[in-house]
Image 1: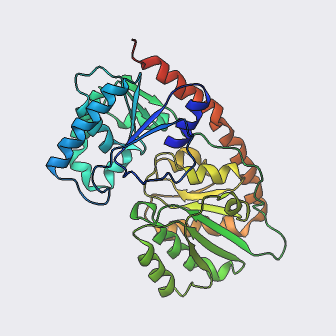
Image 2: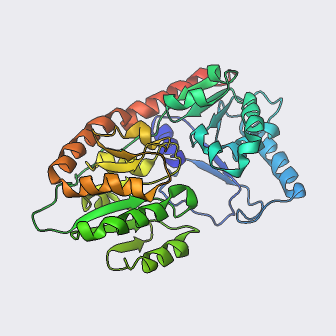
Length: 351
């Protein structure tokens, strides 16, 4: 999302600078416009926790760099980096946007719940807080709400669509794309699929991603004796073909912000399965219209109960897939980036 925004703002004639801890030899995963000035601070290893001395040096380096650059607006993604930047810039006068990337519901699932009040209070240092859905605003304290703006992620329209109904006698594919980590709940999807696999022999499940839970998930697939029906593949740069080759998409997460994989699947004309208890997913999926949502966000049985009817009904998938395309059109990139540009202009520092 950050790279997409930078590329678009360059295209619109703005100057953009990127600041990160990355080492000098770092490269971006996604293509970034050559006009973006990338400051790689090369301070520490991202995989190792920084000590007090390194944190202090980073703070000083941040302040020096920003004061030298003199930006009209500073935007920081996620709370940790935001707090670092905000404290480094105290008293500097540079407008600061805190770009939240998850729903406030996340505090119900993470150990940082006990710090929720302190985290919310730290957002007083922001001139603007962006969230990814209007529905998330009520999850923040009233003292922050007048500075919160809801801007979802942009969704590129698909060049080619999936065929959710599939061909007669053809194999069907259930697709899940996401980091292999505990909030994504892929273990529940594996369990749910294994419960109903015998009743839908024409279906296979493909999990796409990598992460710390890879071995756990592979072991679970083997224990369920599903190695011939469930495959786990690493992430790829070009994923449109994965959506096009699939017939149903499922993201069984506990919480999200704006789940890009769900939005991309919708753009390709796929119906969606997931949990109604997952913030982010329930804002995109209207159960009964462009997919089905299981109750809560922790039951494999509940998930199996919504997957089975979707897998058995080709016409329903086709109808819901068309609705997905219709619903996602409101997130067209030009609409979303107009909102971002408007917000940047609103809080920009006046020389």
